[in-house]
Amino acid sequence: MDINTAPLHFVTPAPPLVADELAHIGAGLRFADNPSDYLKELRARYGDTFLVDVFGYKLFCLFSPKGLESLYSLPEEQASFGLATFDLLSFKTPLQVFLDTDLNLFYQLLAKKRLPHYLAETNRVLAQALDSWEGELEIFDAIRTLEQRIGFGLWICPQAAELPLWQNLKQHFDVLDQEKAFVDPSQTLRTLKNNKREEQAAIEAIQNLLEALSQKVDTRSPEISTLAYLHSHFADFDPAERRRRVAHNTININQGFLSNLYAAIAWVLVRVLQDDSIKQRMLAEFQEAEQRFGADWRHSLDALDSLTFMEQMLMESVRLAQRSITLRKVLSPCEIHTENGTFTANPGVYITTLLSVGNTRSEELERFDPDHYRGNRLKPELVAEGPEQVSTFGHGRHACPAQRFSHMMCKAVLAAIFERFEPSLISAEVAPSSRQMGGVARSALPARVRMKARS
Image 1 (cartoon, rainbow, N blue to C red):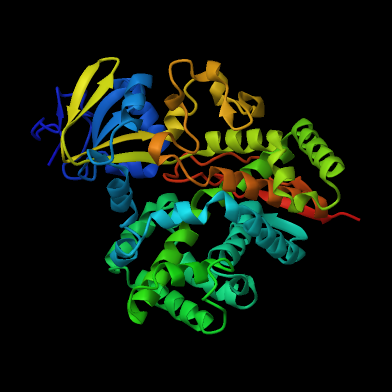
Image 2: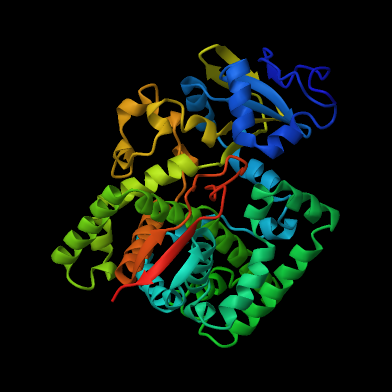
């Protein structure tokens, strides 16, 4: 149904309606081709509040400070972030993975008391994985693979990060990779056309690998590994259901770990290599940490916490590369307050904003500068009308619980790289892709880096 002939009860009073659409398809083709540029164009034409149809999904788009404040304050039972995320990700991931997911696990596994163990495992994998890095690399691919291997050690068990198991796991996790659908929407069409056969086979293969691994490692001590933690968490289920739930939650945890973090770390490295003054600030901070905490400072959580400039680098890199779409699925009528009045959004509508549109809303915010942040806080004067104007790790109750973990991981990886190598950027043009929707964008073009081992 064309949005212009559809009943206008989706949002009342009716906001500006995007007019140049195709019946049944809506604005889907242009949105899929380049969501960031397209929504920037619509915002310039229709203002900060409008309704657009994307392949039948009615998106009530908000970009004004007051509208964004209203969006982030909506209660989950009225406008669900979880169900909207499910709708988005279910194009790629088979339904049973979501049905078995326990979202509380993300918060339990990211508890502060577990971070020292995660740091130790991260450094253990880094010591092995960086052996193969000398020479030229496409840095986004290289860090993605590195983060996958670290993730298998963290979110399964240390044995899962060893050869050849981690490569077998990677092969099947790559089939399930949500990012492929975001970077190239044609991948989603292929998935739907094949009725997710490849994804189903990958899930079965991962479950078999985890079952074989469970026979070899101690699953009775949840403090030792995440695999053991999951077996303990689902201990009350019968063996077959427990194995299934362990596999499905392992998949979700590993996918969540990889979705944004690897690209964020890659951007920090690229930004450092693009500006020698920034690199010198980072290296000086590393040297100060070593003088304060000793030669093994990279293995100290307190030492990593002291790297405040690195926090600024991560936040600023994520801000400019962020391509996530914030979606809330309306379950019951809810009021949205904007500068142009109050609207009522009804079931059948998704309330949304695209972070790549709002994160560069001023001339100052269009440029890269780590000093836009003090630690992990954006300077208030840059968002004088409200903090929701810019988003990196989200706001409110749905803010990403992994922010502290992400800072730890970025610092540990960058410190290990610069301890072992003298990297240099080969590619002349490295900028975030505007065509990607979801997560932190990769570079629009391959980003090649030369890794020269330090003598």
